[in-house]
Length: 167
Image 1 (cartoon, rainbow, N blue to C red):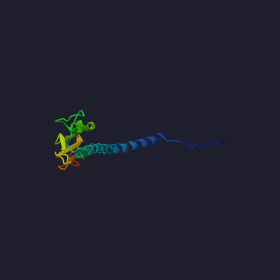
Image 2: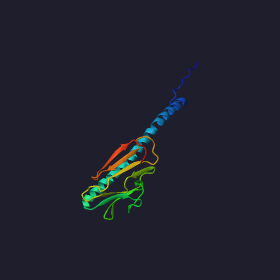
Image 3: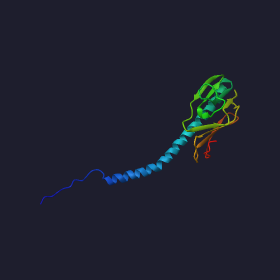
Image 4: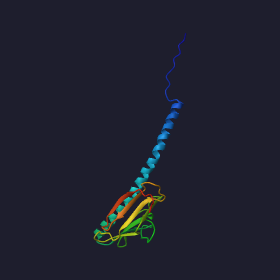
């Protein structure tokens, strides 16, 4: 009588592979919305922090140059606009020379403000109080706004809101 030996097979069966793929798909479908929210939050925070850094630079340049310095809406990077949203971009200028240019906000973002221009006196004191809201152009419910408050002293603060109204 001849004995037949079976070799142990290496690898996965089709059923094991399909179960693994199904489990991975379920886990991925749970993780993607959280990842999207985290990405959105990061972009909103970065845009708000850019505005705060611009305010700080405008204020410090006013003190350093002993001249009025302005931060204003600009779509071309060289002149201030009288109207329009900050999502077009903005500049910091003093005595007609541009100190810093900031590009437009990422696509799908809206940046609204109570002022199109923020001035800083040579003492560093803000001549204009402003509220700048950074949000999605089509907000949904949730913490999808960052509000930059520029107070009378010329300092800026960021706060996170849950309005989702983009106003």
